[in-house]
Length: 130
Image (cartoon, rainbow, N blue to C red; front, side, top):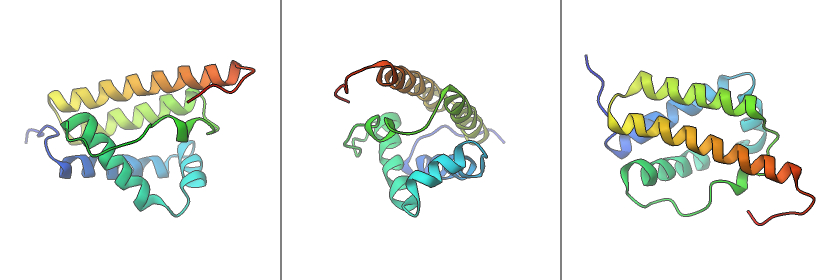
């Protein structure tokens, strides 16, 4: 049976729930996310639904800046590579099509941007605005 593309909020919820379920089981990422999010997973998942709904479906429900919460996280390129691997695997397992491809592309771009910003923060003697 052919996979459908990402089209509705229910698709976003399935993607986000499946992805973060796998992230939480990952020995590298799980402790980082659980250590920061703690018992606030429902709140975090709701925020991620809104973020990806805005990004992929063009339904503007997310208001905020995604980078600042990550600025102080103890994460490296290995974390980003692992995150991207799980993200791509999850998208490919559930969906196929233009929006699915866009989800993977946007994940790649977001990870690259976050890494650049984290590197800049780590190499700066001053605290930049984020």
